[in-house]
Length: 507
Image (cartoon, rainbow, N blue to C red; front, side):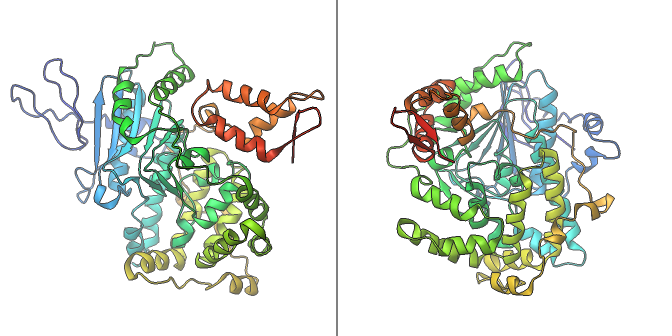
């Protein structure tokens, strides 16, 4: 049964404890083991879904793989599998979701922080090795599909959460860890953050809502990251817009304490609360690292847009082969990378990037579940995971290469996007009906190219200087650290300066 995360000794504050552990009062009373209200879980679920049963702990669940804490208005969830880089599994999801549901209804919970145990990882992804083993059994793909269904329900719940939610992306943040963070209004990167979507490496596709957030990144950067699994480190996770803030990892404990001190009035809107939290986070800013320049900028960024804006893999490969000069070496490495990936995954992922930008957040998770279920039937996922994580050899993809797939003329993506043919009992039912077509809190992140373009063209025929545009964009974010550098790179790359010194947007 679900157990209380804390106990009280008189009026003492709640303590951070393992999820299923008990605690004793100062006078040695028996442990207090209060249950979560399972009736509430059932009533929150859509008709026909027994959420309490779906989230009920299983005998095989690890007891302490999630640690929850409470201090004043702050609630924390710590992923506690540091030896496995906090990789996400069903046991952890069954602990996290009930707490989020409970806290969303509680007047005592003001802010939720998601973080990982240990210095190496926030969350390095899902436990794919276990899924590959399940897939080797008769009908095992259905059990694997259930895992993804549970994970995507959690991710959608986070994406539509009605309380302020902050993800500490401190350390490796990949796959399942991205799902726990990327849809949050606050995503804090540190000098230890390593971001990637490595799914095409193992014969899968970028999931956990990647269909929504990657196509909405500036230019073709999202497509590039999806197809190549390229990694971003530290400050570059912020510069790219994946993180909303950058802090040094040593500041996170102090930030937690500060968040616990925040007090909101009952009538404060969610936006008001988010702005107060944003100000609190900025109190711990110590500047961007001088030894970590922006990686995706200038000529490299232009090359990414030139090569990865195409709608077929064949066109992308031709564009990479045509690169010359300063970006030729990068293009050669990128071609080698693409040829190591699962050909099926690469083709499915490109189509995903082209159509996902039109999906709402709810559609995203429903359709990604259908795609994931199809991949559980496909041999490349089990082969990719087994080869890379168990045998430590190169995977034997089916089909074997991008060239052979092209020669076959097969429309390999079709089975993955036949959403109308998904059986009713296999369709994903989310935990609520909340939905949106664009992230509602974009102002908390770095400025986008679209925002800066609008600032440039708002000058009309008279125009505006780059400095005037810069002042407006940075001013909207109250001079937050790092914003000026992002805006300056976009203005340098996407505008020209006319004879009167005014900036003109270059398409």
